[in-house]
Length: 323
Image 1 (cartoon, rainbow, N blue to C red):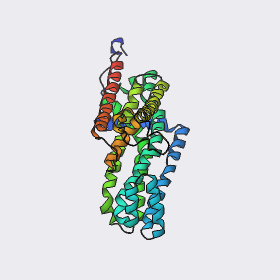
Image 2 (cartoon, rainbow, N blue to C red; image 1 turned 90 degrees about the vertical axis):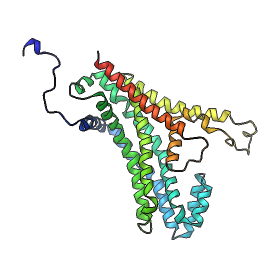
Image 3 (cartoon, rainbow, N blue to C red; image 1 turned 60 degrees about the vertical axis):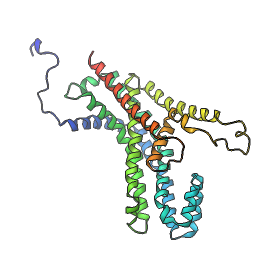
Image 4 (tube, one colour; image 1 turned 180 degrees about the vertical axis):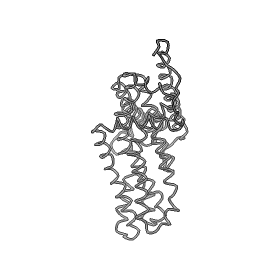
């Protein structure tokens, strides 16, 4: 090869359709992550909590024909701070079905799966971009006709794949379990919107968190620093929310027998905690939001995190390509 032909040249091969290019980035990322044994273990363990809401749906559906089970359902709903729904399930289970299913599925989103999501993203996402920067693998990616946006979409799809496997798929299975346990298929006409709410709540969980995690990953070539920043964001935000809300409780409310959280403005400090911000929006999507304050500040914050995080990742990639 002549010396003057060395260097980058235009791509003369067959081009893949633009919509399929992120798929191949995602496929390589998923295959690399899947080789880790600990990840497969986490994915299997993440499915175990589905037994709790599934048992709740099973008990509720059988309480329509077995009245002695209604007390158990009412006790379960009272423990979830849903006393009005508990009374309705005792008197008319068929009218309470939609809300009971929504409460159980939202509880699944908010507690076991959100905790697993934080752990899983903190172990997967930080190495997706930082490893490419450290090993200069991004040069291999962009030696092909791949744009930064397609690269980011492909890397995001890696996280979405695993989160969908532990969040969206189990929630849809919960809904199907409820339909199968119902007396007839007419229940689908009463609860079909729950499927749409599951998808919307999944998107609210997947998109902003992935953008934030990839943003941390793009800032450093050491994935452990990105992992630390990810976990610190969730832990410090949760602790700050708890401390600041407790400081707003009057001394008389802190005495034994008083309600320490009565009349506390939770909305004031909610945006400091990713956990409570996501919970506000997801509860609103399931039409179960009982907290004070508008949901729009939380929605705006999640949109801002998504846009700014994606913009930072794109700028970091372009800056490396410009060197």
